[in-house]
Structures are given as structure tokens and as C-alpha cells.
Amino acid sequence: MKGVILAAGFGTKFWPYSEVRNKCATRVANRPAVRWLAECLISAGADGLVVVIGHRGQSVRGALHGLPTPVQFVEGVPDEGTALATLRAASTTSDDELLVAYGDVVTSLANVRAVVDRGRDVDAPTALAVPLENAGGVGRDWINLRLNEGRVAEVTGHSREPSAHVMGGLFHLRMSRDGDFLQGNPGLVTKVDVGAMPPVEADLAASLQLMIESGHAVAATEADRVWCDLDKPWHIIRASEIWVQHLLDQHECDVVPDGCLIDDSADINGRLVLAPGVRIGKRVCIDGGAIIGAGTEVTNGAIVQGPIHIGRECRVRHYCQLEAAALGDESIVSHGSEFCGGVAFERAYLYHYMEISGVVGASVDFGAGTVCGTLRFDDGATVHRVKGRREVPTDNANCAYFGDYSRTGVNATIMPGVKTGAYSLVGPGVILSNDLPSRKAVFVQQEHRTIDWGPERYGW
Image 1 (cartoon, rainbow, N blue to C red):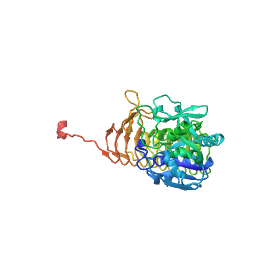
Image 2: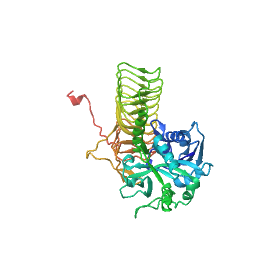
Image 3: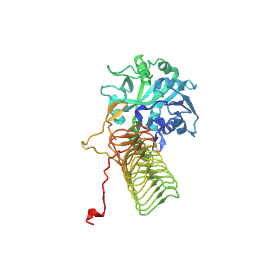
Image 4: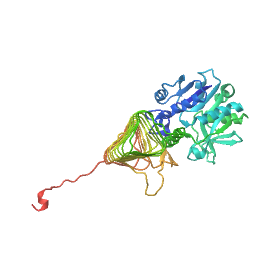
């Protein structure tokens, strides 16, 4: 069986985090999502991987570098669709049995094995079906599956009708049996509501529907709760929360290697999984599970609320508060800084006195006093624009989203739900209430009044 990972798409709904990388290479619990996925496919029995790349393909190559299983990269076309991308991958291998995965899916090994086992047991193409409540959002956000006694009865695209399951981006196929339906893909999802507007992409969903309409059975297996599709920026937080808890659940007891130092004054409640060289210093409070990477120091009164994954060589110190799903490698959270409710990629710099909530891209530099607003006066959720469409996320709608390699000046204020693009700059004192495009800077323009002043003002 060959594993196939589809990682060519533009990820246009993922802005600002698809500018410097393919979204499949986005870090979840301090490793690229596609790396976690590849390891699951290998553990489920794939004896090699074929990876279709396109947009920012080098980031996917880098994410998969060093895997113990052979990886073959195939150049795809980002907007050709997943059916044609699968055909590209299939043309490079003599294996008839394929385990196909969308590269932006974060899911458990149990789900991957369930798809393989089901496909082999019933000798039929098999898709992972995700309960809508686990996927988040509403049915019209997804490719919908209608199930009937363990089979897919209908595949519809972003339907207005209520949906119990959505397509989970994981498939077991045999090219000798199913390849003709990939070749015969109509080039877009035709099973849509009247008035809907499907894009011209040869989606695997259309091939599954073609199989059903031709009288062929399509099997389904229901996913457990460890599943997330990295479709939009707020899914980074959701995926990290799910995956960090999944990693912690695999440990029945604390892991503290020789050489790690934990001060007697530290107050620790919850599972602790440490890599070599970790130091937990005086007056540190850790509540909830924590996975901490090699060489990281949590010292001098730092407050850490888990579940959390802290990367390697981080410095968390000086009475800061860290209540997030993940903190990236080589990051600093220092004197009086608060990072609550979110994810930070590698080398985030929260040095002195700030309140940050949301997703922090790679190497973001926050000026002292930067503040994120998260509570609106109407107590509601922020409306986001995704490719022009108004959306209200089911969670993390009021978080801020800082693009990779962006910066803020001192006392910048970011209002609920605002995104800053990659390579952007928010100047000192700016109150940012609208999204800032990538490669743009915004500054306050003040009007000043200068008058005479001196001892005479005090009666001299």
C-alpha cells in the first residue's frame, strides 16, 4: 500500500498563514501538520509516500525531510483539484492500493487505521466521515456526506440542508477498481444546491458521487474526536488543542528524564512530559498537562496553564502568564507578559508587559505594551471576511491573528478578530480595528500643539 498526501493547494482561506508556507506545513504542537500525518500513514502500513506539491512546495519538502520511509514528490497544479492530484500520484507507482490523505488534515492513527481496515474488509472505496459537531461550523462550510448503514449514500458540496457528517479528507482506494472514476471526474462538484456556485476543480468528492450514481458502493467509517481540517486561521488553535490533548493522553505517568531540574518550590498539578535538559525554577506554577521541549527553561514565577506544548529552547520566565495550546521553539515569554488562548509558532518574542491572544506567526516581534482586545461591548463574536464571505467562527472568533515575520510597536492595540498580514508592521500607539494586508505598515498620524512653558507658569 502506498500513502498519498495531497499538499499542492493555494490555501487562500488560510491567510495570513499561507503566504510563507504551504498550509500543510503549518506547525501543530511544534511540528508541521503534514509531518504528523505522514507518520500516521506510515504507522498504518504505507510502505512509501507520494506527495503532490505545488504552492510553496519547498515548505512541504522541508517538513518531511528525514522520514525513515521513502518519499517521492510530484509537482502538481494548485487548483486542478484532488482527483487529478491523486491521478498524478498514482501514475508514479505500481501499487494498486492507495491510502490518500489531504495534507491539511490533523487526525489520529486510529482514524487512519479504521479507514484502511474498513476498505479492505468490504473491498470498496472508503472515506472518513466526520460528525459535524466535531468538525465545527455548519454544513455549508464543508463537503457533506449522507450515510446509510455504513455506506455513503450521497456527497454534496456546501449544502444548505442540515448535514450530520462531512468529508474527512482520508480515503482508501484501489486504482484498478476506482481509477476510472477519477479519470471520469466532471471537473467540479456537480451535486450542489440550486444557485450554489462550485469552483472549477476536479474534487475527489465528485468522483465518489460518480461511483454512487453508477451503482458502486462507497463505504464510510466514522472519525473519533481527534480530527481537524486546517481550512481557516482559527483552525490552527482548534487543531493544536485537540492534538496536544491527544499527545498527553498517550502518557499514563509523568516523563522526567535524568538531568531535568525541578525546583522544590514549583507548584505542579497535571501530567508533565519533559524532554532532556528542561529546567523548572523557583515559584513556577504549572496547572494542567504540559509537554516541554529540550533545553527549555520555565523559571522565576512563571504561570503556565495547560494542556500546552512548549517547544525546545524556550524561555518562559519573570512572572509571565502562559495559557495557550502551543508555544513555538526558541520563543521568549518574559516579564509580565500574558499569552492566553492561542498558538505561537517558532521564535515568538513576548518580552515585556503585553496581553496577547490568538495565533502568532513565526518570528513575530511584539513591542512592549501590545494589547489584544478579546471581549466586544456587544458580548458577541467578530464577523470575519474569508475570500469576501462573511463568516462567524464557532470558536476563537475574537482572537487576533498575526502573520509570519510581522511586528508591533509599543502600546499597539489589536481589536477582536483582526488579522495582520505576513511582513506587516503595526506602529506605536496604533489602534488596529481592520485587517492589515501583508507587506504593509500602519502608523498613527497625530496633530500636536506646542506652547511656551516654564517657571513663569508657577509665579516666578
